[in-house]
Length: 334
Image: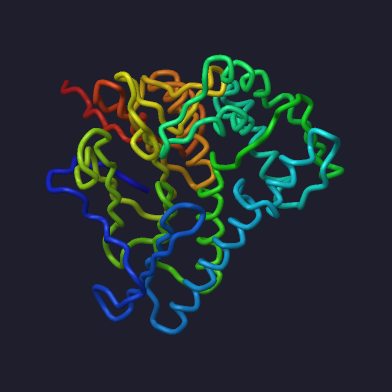
């Protein structure tokens, strides 16, 4: 399904741009800013108008998910949950019920390394303004973190918070989920060759008409054009979480948006994690899980998940690969 090669000449993926013809008459691509990140779609269509309409549908779905799941929109379903769930059960859409159930499953699988209630701590950081919580504020917020206190009733389709001060954020997998939905839309419209990306989350559909899609893994401590590896991909999802996305450095320490729910602080043992799996939601959730757990424990967890692979760049710049990405060992000569 996919392989691994080292990069020697920089990224080989196709740069996103405005809607335009590219490479051949059938390639279309477009980029927009949605969900606080760059959303890019590139696809092959025999009919340019049909291809443009397919991209329109993807962008409309991205806007819909943003309206429902943004913590910054007062009328989003997520904001309604955060506003009202401490007072009692809040009615959920079928979609939100399903997503909260997935979040619960990842929290259980990871022993709490993935926990959407980390938001009680996460909201205290402002990376642009270089603001971090005091020790007292951090301790108070940590008392509100704990996925077991997020009480989901799947049958009644409600959720309530069992601790004061709780809040949730779906940023741990919302972009991956959006990419999954986009891929379903494109396939339903007969698109057989495409790539959809939302920040560090991507899904490739088919190949690039005779050759794989090439996705570079950025070097976490060099320029954005420097890659530590390039993955040739066909029909797979990929997600990268890195400590270089939203951060500030202070006193020789990096404060970044990937937070360990147990401590309320940024993990230090890893610089980036790239996960490959069948669906984008799983990729994004597990990339953040492995980042919190660290290379050794995180890769051990992934070994229990069929069809999931990863590349981890640790704090020393060393690359770690899951077994599925390591070259096969030739048989010993007799």
